[in-house]
Amino acid sequence: SLAALLSLAGSFQHATPPLRRPHTLRASTLPPQRRSTALQAIPIEDMEAWTREYYAAARDSRVRKGESLDQFLQKYDYFDDDYVLTGPDVGPLCKRDFVATQRGFTLDFGKAIPDLDYLLDGFHVDPDNADRVWFTLRYVGTNDGQSTNIGKFELKPTGNSLRGGPELHSIWWTPEKRIKWETVGYAGCRFTGTNEGYGGLAGLLIGIGVPR
Image 1 (tube, one colour):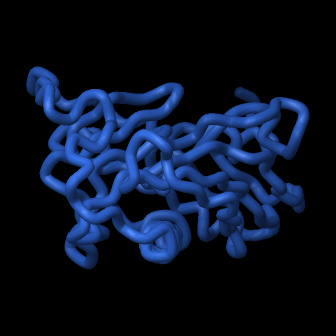
Image 2 (cartoon, rainbow, N blue to C red):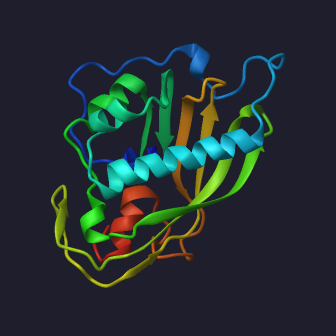
């Protein structure tokens, strides 16, 4: 939410963890499977449209404008109360802990990579959860902007073109158009793309010359 970017994009953050004891996930949220088959499933067309809308909002706010998560949440209401974020290097994080880890952390890639975007494709429904959609994400852009900092890293213009390899993501949507579970950043092949097999923020930084 990434996007956990993503969401997306913020899912591989290096922020200070919350001081409070991590919230225990309720058993009803684990594992991410639909608990009732009697309800009508969300059409795949709707889930794809919602996902594209969510990722575009996260890109414009969190990535290009460098806005905080609090600023993002003032504009959008995508996260369900039972929201959970997972990735290869993060989570599972409940909504409270996800928001806490993001406070004070921004992803201002807009200065370094003005045209940064991601391509989404391969949308398909999870066979075990009719309200969960899986898809691949590829980062694209050119590091020809201004110098900026991402945490301790100084990002200087390199002129490098970014063409990330496929990363596996998923979103479990509720009928109310809120995200219940988000999976981000599982790289598909370390020999494909400029991310060298790393997902999320790590893959982006490698593509513009920052060592892992």
